[in-house]
Image (cartoon, rainbow, N blue to C red; front, side):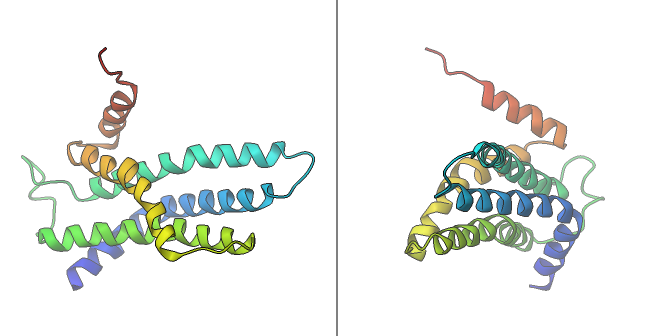
Length: 169
């Protein structure tokens, strides 16, 4: 457990600026969502902020996950002497805990605050199910792609190729 917390603290310390960017985007998205309801008239600025945050937030999630995985590279030809001897379970638990705390929890809390501000009722189970698309479409692919990448540039190229690949018909 201490090894897991040590890895988690290291990741938070190294990725703190990126976590703050994601929190700022999530906050802006929540504020724009609340303000866009019930406003009559000029909503162009709110719509632009909402659209920018809505498109930038998943991209920020994907790159934060990639940087998280690339912090502790898999043992390879030259990586063994550079990486501390972590147990795989401690490393995996730390990365999952980091993802839940820095990505899923802010999304969950912003959903609660949006629904509460608008006076709508909600069920916690429905809010947990809302996390599933983020997990399936952003987290798992980002972990898989960054697991086979050696750098953030290579990750970006893999991601760009994956997104721009068209199926053969």
